[in-house]
Amino acid sequence: MSQEKLSLKGLNFQATKIEENKNILTITLNRPEKKNALNNVMVNEICYALAYAKQERSVRVIIIAAEGDIFCAGADLRREESESNVPKIEGADDISLMLRHLYKPVICKIQGSVLAGALLMVTNSTHAIAIKEAKFSAPEILRGLWPHMVMAGLFRVMPKRAGLDFIMRGQSIDASKAKEWGLINDFVEKEQLDEHVKNLSEELSNLAPGTMQFGLEAYEKQDAMAFDEALPFLQKQIAKTFEGPDAKEGIAAFLEKRKPDWDN
Image 1 (tube, helix red, strand yellow):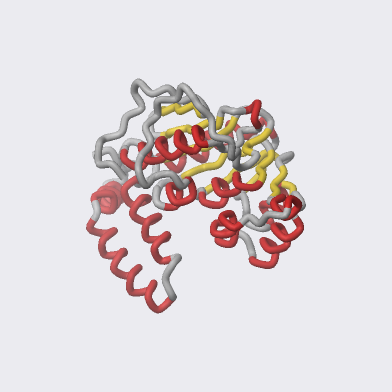
Image 2 (spheres, one colour; image 1 turned 60 degrees about the vertical axis):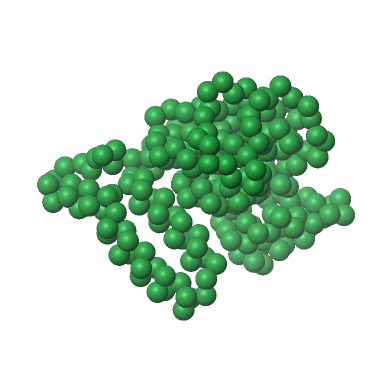
């Protein structure tokens, strides 16, 4: 990845909308006429925005939202010429890896159905909140295909038997079943989605940002380790956490009976 400092200024995002408000960056999929299918332009814009979010200490939470009635219908393999001038960052073109290595809270705000490759965003985010009417499906088998890439994230959040049945039959599940199987954190009434995600994002943004990032990185690394390897690794991370500025500020604030100031 390029070491040049990334900026949003002067960029024309065509397939997405990017909004930075206080400590929260919102990426909105903006191809409702194409069911927000992920084409080359949208993937590049999402990856750039995620790289920017990782770079900026001020960005503490990322929300992935969508316009229209469908959250995302998966991949659109047709390449598209566009007026987007968002730079392509070498080595940063995989949304799943970008989300996994962001080490910041990412909330998928799901206002409609999620299909096929769109599950990559849902399964690799830290949180997923959907409306009650949302449906989730991996229909690849119905077309003679298989959701190979989806499996990497899917089986990290869903029980294996449930996940296998989900991709083997290609049938959709509702939000209630998605919550039961761990695919989403929660579902709400349609008119409550904005407020629910707003409250969650603000709550997360008010927590120790450095420790949050450090902790999520430790979580991701230990997830790939055997237990005997993970335990000593995590013991070392505890010591490093106590040495960090967030821990020092948090402990001082507790002793002084005040709210911590994470900006200093």
